[in-house]
Amino acid sequence: MIIRNDDLPSKLTLYLRRFLYFLTKERFSKKLNYDWHKTSNRFDLINQIIKKKEFKSYLEVGCQSDVNFSKIIINEKVGVDPQSGGTHRMTSDQFFAENISTFDLIFIDGLHVYEQVLKDIDNSLKVLNENGVILIHDCLPSKIWHQTIPQTHSSWNGDVWKSIVKSRAREDIDTYTIKADQGLGLILKRKNKNILTHEIKNFKNLTFKDYYTHHNEFMRIVDEKDIFEIIN
Ligand SMILES: C[S@@+](CC[C@H](N)C(=O)[O-])C[C@H]1O[C@@H](n2cnc3c(N)ncnc32)[C@H](O)[C@@H]1O
Image (cartoon, rainbow, N blue to C red):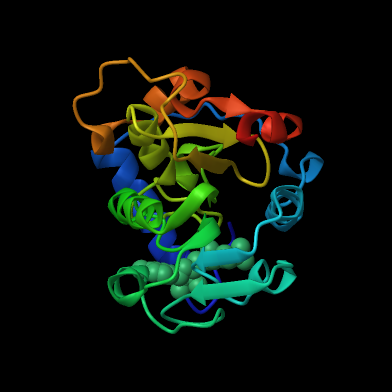
């Protein structure tokens, strides 16, 4: 994900944060070679799912300049963002506190921080229609710098990936990551068909090295061509 220029800290700030992270948190230089130019983008996949499943209602958490939101073709569209885009000018927490609607497909792409993504997932599960689908953007960072908290690089996925690992250990939901467009988490409200048994004491404390070493198991990465077999 590329952050808007007005939200992006200066190059010097990013550099200093990287240096600090390197000194105090983690040093790991290996990277995963995802080539997102060779995969479908999020709006094509979302529209394909909507069409195939005959979905009628869509919620997007975090809309920014509506790059994705404006391309979604569906009867009812709700978009939530405290700054710009969508239909509701508020945070996802505020939205879920007052919302009474339910949705067939929910796309989570708001604040890219583990704790907030977990809240967005839990709140989404409460208003997801039966057989509905939750998608989460930015789940597969390629390099350590793309997933630091705070942000240290202009291309930033945040630590969304940790919320997928945590979801993978839950029995009541079935979680995957589609290998497309920065990694699209996929959550279905049904019994977990492949629970993560890896012993993890604190998900927030997982390192990029942990992710690099176990990403297939942690994220349950699937090819985009397999989506419909999974969600049917
Ligand atoms: C990566 S952008 C969204 C991009 C958009 N979904 C797309 O695909 O084109 C993230 C957006 O999340 C918004 N955001 C930040 N914190 C939020 C929160 N607590 N609730 C909802 N949106 C939030 C930001 O204002 C920003 O516009």
